[in-house]
Length: 63
Figure (tube, rainbow, N blue to C red):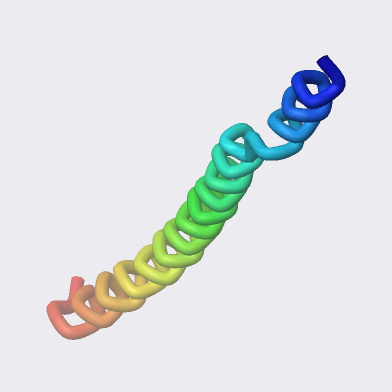
């Protein structure tokens, strides 16, 4: 009977599937946040590039 209880106690600490899924969820969240921040910076840079090209074209074409 004692062997059965010791075996059950050792199985409780051996299951790490929940820990692994939580780690993957945290990694996925960090990747998603990095993508959102990168796309926001890219959008700002492209907006400035379009504004510059618009002003250069307007100056080249004239009124």
